[in-house]
Image (spheres, rainbow, N blue to C red):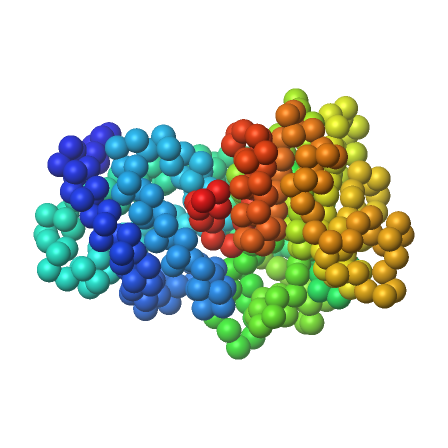
Length: 396
């Protein structure tokens, strides 16, 4: 594989941008249909992003279009490439899995575009695919090597025993996990997640990502899981998994995390179960006694959905209830009624100085990525995590 794409390939790929803009979602849906005909390949992926929510084909269509639009200046795609590599590392995607993706993608382009997908176009896209694939394979190898050789690290899937289970709210339950082998664990970066290989009776193996909701230590991890309506994995965890159950997990992954030594004030903003990575960040700052100012603003529906014990140890959390119940008391259960707003953040947080970390549902992220940007916060000080496939149009 050449270190550079040929000028001819770049021109041909860019020429397909209008077709990708018009038919990208059809192509990616067809690609996954082709790819998942192979059960071994299907089981590599998080199926909740396909069957349960259908969000992954949309995210991939956006990513393929962005790649075609920026193929001659891949530096623009650096953050997206790192995010993909981290997701792949969590899912344990290996070099031998890439050919099946290439075959499915090129086949889908031909299926959807028909005669417009000439041999020359398909050859160009084949070259472009493998150029990007080799970048990802190289980065993923670095991630695998680092996590395997670090203190407490491992490669592949490791057995963890559920040490304890705690109901945090009507919809969120926490699980404390210790390695079955009794050894130490890799200290995660606050904000990262674990990927699980779940073997649920009556279902194909499932893969799910859950943010770590505890500060880093050598003994284990805590995850806090929201019960999703119709969610196969979350329902099983809430209703069936008890202390003593063994779960398989890959090493911590993710590019959304709090730096080891932040040099600016930190503002954490979460919506719903988006508080889980923020708890890890907040606990880390509190336990290490770092001098950097930190503020956590959390929004949830009401007391029934509020996992208050997760942030009870910190006095740095301000809570908004969108729809307080009659039994919810301001000043005791929550601080403000209504939704978090940019105006409130402008008045109560240092917009001109702070780094902002956001996690929550897509509408929540769109509101605050756009709102903070419009309020003058530079893009390099707005960091956000997705629960699910990432898209690149949050600020649009």
